[in-house]
Length: 372
Image (cartoon, rainbow, N blue to C red; front, side, top):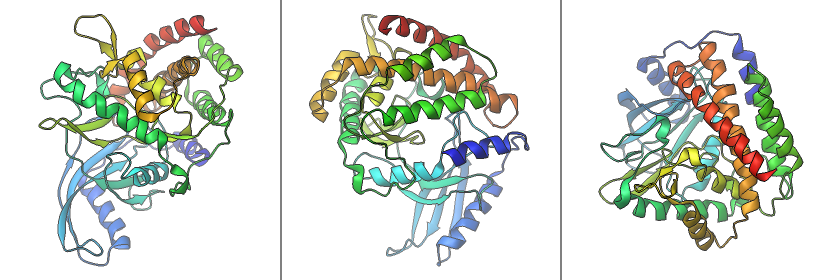
């Protein structure tokens, strides 16, 4: 991650974002495949995919001869960085974790990676196309799935899988997986300290203004780091909008956006998915639905049964503060730079997202007053 952040700074004064054509990306994929495949192949039906606030994505079909299989046509997706994005992350880490959790959670098949942008304009991965939609047909939601309302009928089936998948991820034995690009912190406070150092560095390098509350929150987080007694794989962005599902059978088909995955305390994902600004009120207005799935307390109760792990509400409070603080780092600090410097294809969207940061700051203030 130091290399990722250093590369970001080295590119900061370089050229801005220039639209990349489908032809360029297809030629980049061809260059990559010529180093990976020995049989002839053909790239078909390339088109842009919408959604997301950080990466460029293209769907296509590859007519090829997979090793050990007969010739076939496989739908695939190219996921590539722009010149700079709202979150600077490692495509290698993303590639490794998606590959590792296959069979644990529904995720796309991963095929190839261009870790250093030798073939593509920027680092990229190629993975399989997953069937499904991110929100119910005809529904409305804010950017990247925030506030998605699945409706009473759909949320029952999806909510059950939502919690079961999170429990499966957190109880998965990751020790034998190929995760060479991941830091493995010691039990204790090292895992949360690593995350604090990560996002403090991002805030210092990206933000363009001093917000005293952010310094107060950072100091409180440093002084109150909880112990982590077991290391789990943390998705890092586990919420509505980051999974696909098929409407005809109400089945979650793929978990996406693993770029913030890391090893840490399972309470981190639990706290994130129950943040009030990631959910919405029930139809009668009586309670908050965590990530649009179910009441917060019901989610904790179901998780405890599915994972056979006890939820510590003091640690939930800590990670609510952490995630509110991290969210401000991202939407006020890191959203500003690529938009201001013309480094992204999503400049209008990132400017819009920045406005949400002040609502999150108010939640952060109230939460600190509650727990301090």
